[in-house]
Amino acid sequence: MNFHEIWPVNSIIPIWSKLLSKELIGITEVHNGHCEMYIDDTGRCFGLSLIHDAFYFEGDSFSEAIENMLLGRRSRPMLRPDQKSVGLYGETFTAEHAAVYRY
Picture 1: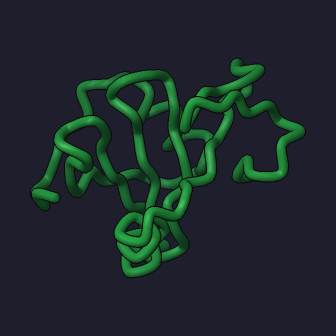
Picture 2 (picture 1 turned 45 degrees about the vertical axis):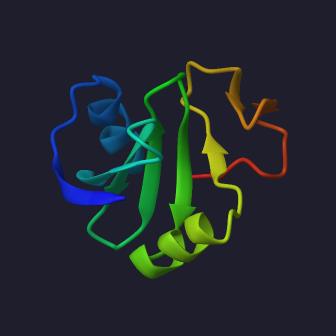
């Protein structure tokens, strides 16, 4: 991981900021630039795939998010209101799936 401020070029971050009612600050690129990590003012961490249309919950704190990543724990996918499903880990998640993070 290379920690540095990142500026979202993807228009999806303002949408998620609005849905979460929180400003999201980009803090690092992850997995060789395949995704970016964002943090909100409560410390919750989220990931944005740069490969496909997926946004996901990483952890309730920075330390939890990093631990989850280092130990290979799966992130919890999130769905926008306009999404019926989202692909992550080669799996398709719908709103009914227990792994989906409810915001």
